[in-house]
Length: 195
Image (tube, rainbow, N blue to C red):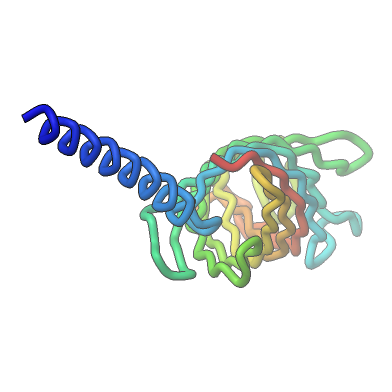
């Protein structure tokens, strides 16, 4: 009887050891893919106006802000969709003074994981903003800031760095005249902590 208990105890220890080892192997194999990781970081970008506004000046904002990147699901493939929540503040040297804009963008980010540590993405979004600048194309006050961008992100351990370029359009959806809108080509860089 004592021999049977020893055998059962030994079998239990071996089973627990095997389960412990298999859990470690599974944990190593199920590390979250880069395309599925959330991140929190910051960006800086600038825009190059597609045309001069009044007095031959161009509306060229310098934007800084935060980015909270939230994938919608955990994919087993190389494609994922995420929402990027982006509060931002901008300075705009215009008409020999400093103008400002601030707001919040909701961006849909369609990412394609190219390698283990790199992602190409296409993103589109919009959000409410406020601008102080008054010019012949856009009234000051409430506007929408619309974006269409392509981007690249690279993973460095638990951090990522990114580059993006695209088109930005600001207008107020006809709430106040003038409302021709301001279009610009933008470039930006970002850094974020992955979690």
